Image (cartoon, rainbow, N blue to C red; front, top):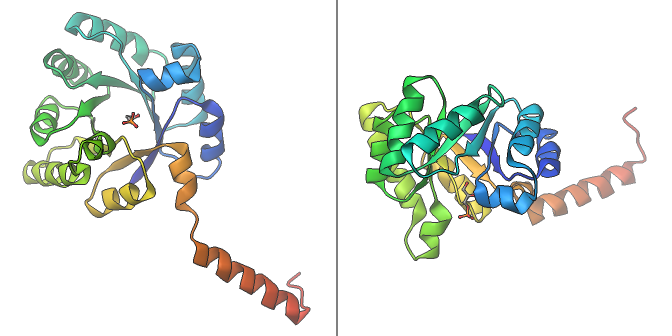
Length: 217
Ligand code: G3P
């Protein structure tokens, strides 16, 4: 499963890039607003930091505007992926970009039917928001399993990009159901490393090695 980081904070992206774990980055208008940065400048900087897919979302909601903005954003760097909301005009724009070799990430997906539509118009990625479904007492990961089954039934190439991740369990659950990508907030990625038994075991190894009085070098 690919790991994307879900942020527009370049310091956090640089730190994670150094781990060798990062396959891409997703942003959205809320994350850009939170960064306080110029949108096109921060996308360009992120594209310099990571080689993988960098999602940049259009602001327009009409077909002509989405196409115009998406084509403009695609010129920033070769690894820019155009993020488009899952609406009728958004899917028409997706079909336009797919027909013209521009990679797309169809976002704000909350149903299997929506994901089926996105695959049929050639979306590169589909972003179902599992956290927001959990927030209303639905089970976001069930949607991922449903989409996985539908896509596998028809060999759709659209990649399932699990988004709106709130905890580390959702990362492993996404991997268990066969998602292609998880886009993970930086803090959640850092939490994935830790287990108390690892810390306890390492402390014991360090203590016992010290008691040998030996040196490896
Ligand atoms: O990439 C989509 C993600 O940023 C949405 O997450 O926490 O706003 O539901 P959240």
